Amino acid sequence: MVQSKNLSDSACLEELRSQLREELTQNILPFWMERMPDQEQGGFYGRIDGHGICHPEAEKGTILCARILWTFSAAYRLLHEVRYLAIADRAKEYLLNRFIDPDYGGVYWSLKPDGTPSNTKKQVYASGFAIYGLSEYARATSDPQTLETAIALFHTLEQKAWDPLYGGYFEAFSREWGPIDDVRLSDKDANERKTMNTHLHILEPYTNLYRIWPSGELAKSIRRLITIFTEKIYDRQTGHLGLFFGDDWSRRSSTVSYGHDIESSWLIDEAVRVLGDEKEIVATTPIIKHIARAAAEGILPDGSLIYESDPKTGDKDTERHWWVQAENVVGFYNLFHRFADQTALDKALRSWEYIRTHLIDPTDGEWFWSILPNGQPNKTDDKAGFWKCPYHNGRMCMEIMARNSCDR
Image 1 (cartoon, rainbow, N blue to C red):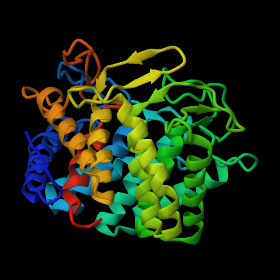
Image 2 (image 1 turned 45 degrees about the vertical axis):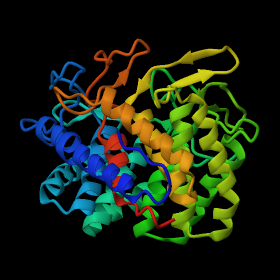
Image 3 (image 1 turned 180 degrees about the vertical axis):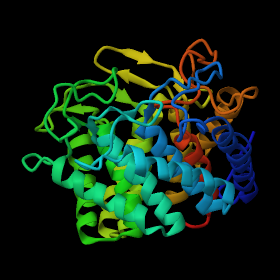
């Protein structure tokens, strides 16, 4: 187990980075490179189940393709391995040629296995991930086409999805950007037109796009999103983020999502720092810390982070999802890295040790979807699929590999 007693323990941090590099390059990336490309119908398979069985008949989701694009583009930018660029190229071409709607703009929600449109609704969340993947590819390669497409998707969201009355982005639309009755991102979500999750994953790609296209209009949109988080989504009393909202930002849920709390803490911090506004950095710092402290309420004695709870009903979901643990590592490492918080580093290290011990699949590779409350791996849900992608765990590794512990 990697352990640290003080901030000068550089050997601990180097060991952590070494372990994460090995996890990224010897487990996560090889799994996706070797098992997910669909050599017959193009792109990537839509699903590998929890028992490692590939399902060529599964639909192909925009989010999966875009997250593969982001992950392998970032890996190429960081490690300069041409084999990673080859997968990024494959994802980029498939996204541009199959998922982009040439008639109405935006991206389709899903495709049939042969690459023809299946569900053509416009989920704003999916457009956000398309921007994220394309902007990272452009960042890694300086490719003008992907940058132009990412900018076009940004303009489409600003024109079609922004609410001029109350602010924020509506959740989903028809293919033609008209209203639809069911705007849910997934079956477990509330059918509300504004959500924390979608706003977080618009802030994230807009921040990444700004790195290579620092336009005034994009900066304005990022600032509006930061304000939405600090004034509408963030609860100043509890530190937690609301999940579902009415058009006027009235809260429609009391559930706490610990993984989203800790993920938001570092993504908001990233956004204000990429903008480079010192006043905004100062103003958001106590909020970022408060959100992270609130997220820590869900940490168990073994270092893992539970999924969610509802303080009104007392219900708790103590399943330990793969993405929640990955964001737990990054979020608390960010507090250590930015603010010299030693206790936060300890949380990150304990979370990583939990992942190494429980979530990584030593037999079939990648990570299990989750660890169930009884301590057993969840093999009912996917190993790879519509939602199980290499982005959370791959980003965890790369975020920490790329950070200099002395650079706060």
